[in-house]
Length: 240
Image (cartoon, rainbow, N blue to C red):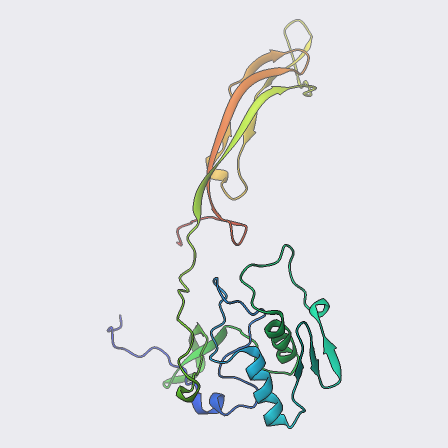
């Protein structure tokens, strides 16, 4: 119903306000200082340089850097203050920089985050026309080139197969009665993955079991898509 150039909604970002903000809104602080990998540091200055600039702006005494510790405003920061995962992450940078980042994150600066901004139309300013998710980084030319851009395309799930072998059953409850009056049951196994109920599979039937035992040697094969980094399975469904 709309032409391709029709304005549906808009949002306005005050870049000057972010650049002059005292809370470091130019580039959000990540949780870790990585020199490589998907979370590579992208600010123009290292955490130690940012900390020195913060002290100059707030008239704090400059931090004192030692080989494995940082002294800042009467407090000593060491490796024990970091909540590092074990085994050590090979992408992490020097300890002094990670401690500087820890101090910066405790100074009320803007953390790294994804903004969700409402899209508004001038014709209906009180009604949201949708939302836009983004983040904005401002890199002053006076501080040199910014870090290299990185690809934020979502990872695609890989296809996996789950094999489930049904060998035998025992002690199955006998619900039926045979013509001779003995308790019996026709045994079979049905299985499916949660979220994939449309792909239910079942074995052949072990007829007239009198002791609750069944012999199958049957294999279920369930295909699914899995994201190893997120440790999540994905399910594709059509939106009606």
